[in-house]
Structures are given as structure tokens and as C-alpha cells.
Image (cartoon, rainbow, N blue to C red; front, side):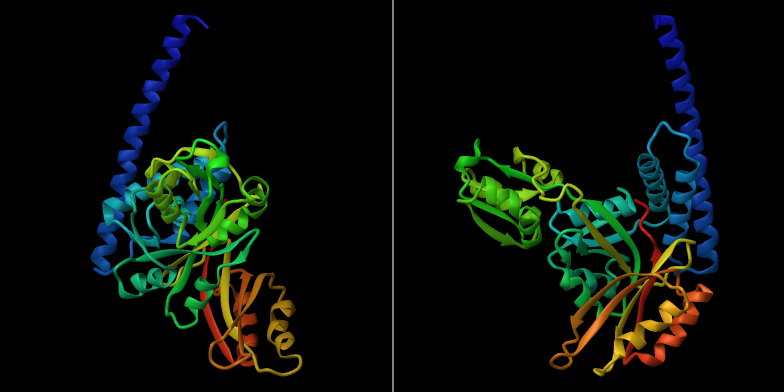
Amino acid sequence: MSDNEIRTVRQQIDQIDQDLLRLLSQRAGCALEVARIKQALDPEVNFYRPEREAQVLRSVMQANPGPLADETVAWLFREIMSACLALERPLQVAYLGPAGTFTQAAALKHFGHAVEARPVASIPDIFREVESGNCQYGLAPVENSSEGVVTHTLDSFVNSPLHICGEVMLRIHHHLLSLSPQLAAVRKVYSHQQSLAQCRGWLDHHLPQAERVAVASNAEAARLAAQEGEGVAAIAGQSAAEIYALPQLHGNIEDDPANTTRFLVIGREQVGPSGNDKTSLLLSTRNEAGALHRLLAPLAQNGISMTRIESRPSRRSAWDYVFFIDVLGHQQDPTLAAALDQLRPQAALFKVLGSFPRALL
């Protein structure tokens, strides 16, 4: 390609950039106009609509002609929507801190970088921040593909009035971070207990001599490793490595290459149908033969697909359990609504935790 050809293509790029800037400004102006109309109708209106955002992202992914990947296109448009929403009213989102955790990464993936992400010390604190109104939304881990359910998150729903408003799937890559120049010098490894479990095989093989210490978060592990210096390592993500200036001794040490964590978005308002949704239920049944079968039968009879079921102690009496169930569909869908009407009389406890758009990626 000659210099003239390169110059011609660059001129085309410059023109496209100008067009993009003009269109982005027009979009932001439309977003502000929508906000003005909404606020005139209801001063307390919630500008963020998860179902609308999910519909927009699905639409642009389906229309994507390439060569950009669908995931890249979704990321770009999510950031555009995040910036436009911040012009209307910035969102405050509580996440499990400190800065550098995977929960923070999930919050930014879901809401975009224009959100005001606020770190808190524990999962119950996430619920308290949202219940009190200090934050509009919160993000909490609920399950990992290799290590299973995060019990603190499920247990927090039992007595909480909050709703599930969305879900985020985040591929998790764990790195061994340390100021030590070599593996042989590492005598202690800090990390969250879930991350230690997700890297158990690698640690058994490469660091069998090192003490494993569970801490509140991977970011806290990185902070401790940076503070204590050589001989100490942390298992954490790239964000924590950058924040705490820790070199990476080994990357991607998770035992399962497809290691993924699912996070739930929690808020005070119900979410409308997006066209591709899940519904989460909290149920309990009488302790008698066939009770669970009768409880779930309406789902099968109405052709409702159940994607997940977990049991947890109810904490009301010994050997009494509640069930967390995810099904496909929105609670307003006629078929699912009929199934729930039939299920409700069979349940000793019946609570719809929320209907929400399924994770895109």
C-alpha cells in the first residue's frame, strides 16, 4: 500500500470519527430530553431501565456486521449508554470491596465506567446500602462454575425486601502476584477462600509448602502481599495487580480454564419484561412425603424450564429448608404467571425475588 493510499484511508477514518462524534452528541441530547420528559411526569423517576438496556444491547449484537466481535460491540454500546445515563443522573452501585475485586469488575461490566461504584466490606453491607437508599443498586457474587453457590448472598435474600434486577457472568482469571522474584521464595499465599479453592490444584503442584490464608477479598489479599513484601503472594485479578503495584509471578492459575462467576444485581424496584428473562423464586414446603414434587409440578405442567435449584437452612427451626429456584421467563409472561398461581398454594413460603434480563455474555 502506497503512502497516498494510506493517506486516503486515514482521511476516511477522520471523517468517520467526526460523524461518530456528531451522532454521539445527538444521542446524548436525546437521552437528556427523555430524562426531562420523565422527570416532568414523575420527579422521583428511576432513569435506569435494565430491560430497555438489555433490549438495546441484544439489538446491536444481532445487527453487528463485523469485523468487531459481538462482545466488543456490546461493551462499546454499554459504555455509551453509561455515559448518557450519567448526564441524567449518575448511578450509585455498591459492590464487595475494596477496589480491585472481581465484584467491582462485574459492576463496571454491567453498568459501564460512568457509574459511581462504592466499595463496602461485606455482602450484607451491599444489601444494607441498597435498602437504605444510599445506593440505587448493588452487585453480589452468587455462584461460581467450579466451586458452587455463595451462601452469604442467598441467605441475605431471606429477610430482604430487595429484588434481583439483573445478572452478570464474568470469566475469572486468577494470577499469582508477589514482590518475590521466584516461586521458591513464597511461603504464604493470601486470597479469598473461593479463589483458594478455584486454584487448589495449581497450588498443590507448584506451592505445596506455602501457607494458604483466606481473607475477605482478593483485593485485600493483594494489599497484604504488597504491604508484607517478599515471601508473601496473593491470588487476585489484573485490576488488583495494577492498583497495588504487584508483579505477576504466574498468570491464569485457576484449575478450570472456563472458570466463571455469576453475580446478581439487586435493587428496590421490579424490572419489566425484556423478551429474554429469568425469574428467581424463594420457596419452602411442608416437611412431608412428595411435598417438593408437588411444589415443582406446576412448572413442568406449564412447560417452564428450571435452570437452577439450591436449598439453604431457613434458620427458623432445625432441619427446615428454603429453596432458591431460577426459571426461564418473566413473571408477567402468561404461561409463567399461570404456573406461579398454581404453585403458590403448595408453598409454605412463596416469594418472587425478581424477574430480570438474562446475561448477554
